[in-house]
Amino acid sequence: MDTRPSAYAVIIEQGKILLTRWVPSDGKTPAWSLPGGGIDPGEQPYDTVVREVFEETGYDAAPEDLLGVDAGYFDPNAGSDRIFCALRIVYRAHIEGGTLRHEIGGSSDQAKWVPISDLDKIQKVHLVDAAATMMGYANSTDWARRFRERKLAK
Image (cartoon, helix red, strand yellow):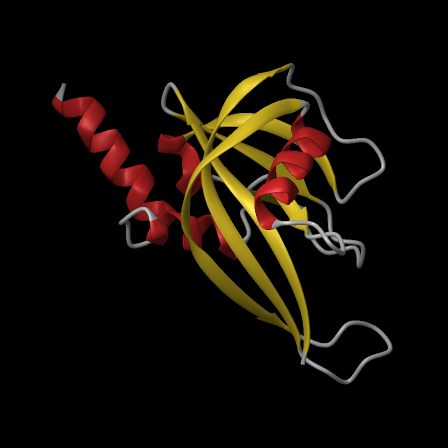
């Protein structure tokens, strides 16, 4: 199995979550994901999430705590017969500065604040559901539904 460790951030402000739109290199449909990406050789996961959030969104992020680890398994990459494992370390983080912008020349093409209540209405990668589970929800659809219910109850 080929494994790639990576680090991602869950950043929430004013009822919205910061997401980036991942554009697969194989022409598949783009989908929304958490900001983050692969750990460079010699880099620590904390430093990776800070670097990746900045590269993909323009924001300076500060990780607060570790939410969990998720392993995603995928078909072998081109030229390989080995299953690919994306080992994803997920942090809760907050913004300390910077200005929202889109990544240029990377694996994502957009960054935006998505209302939590709309998480069940967008095309997203499994990692968003995994992060919702790490935060105590069944998945991102459950998170969106419960968020809407809390807003209605106020």
